[in-house]
Image (cartoon, rainbow, N blue to C red; front, side, top):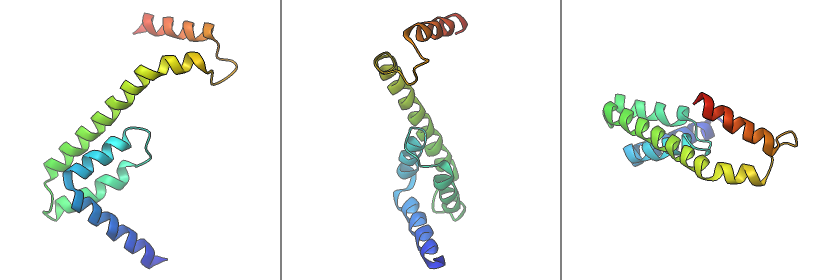
Length: 112
């Protein structure tokens, strides 16, 4: 079991090094959307490689920040485009009616 975990960790560390800044960016885009890749799996190996001189810490920070922003913006855009059509077709709960959705929209418009 211990050797398996060691092998998985070594493989992941090598993956982050091989893909570099592009890999960090793409994984952080996924992390900021619905794909379950936590930042805790992406950033520590990248920081380790930066400490070893294989990556630049500024590049790691820039790639991670840009990836997080792009992923969040992508999620927002998808929700903005698909949210209202999906919510008007299918109700998540029987207590959510078209009237209550209209009330929520009006409250959001009033308060910003």
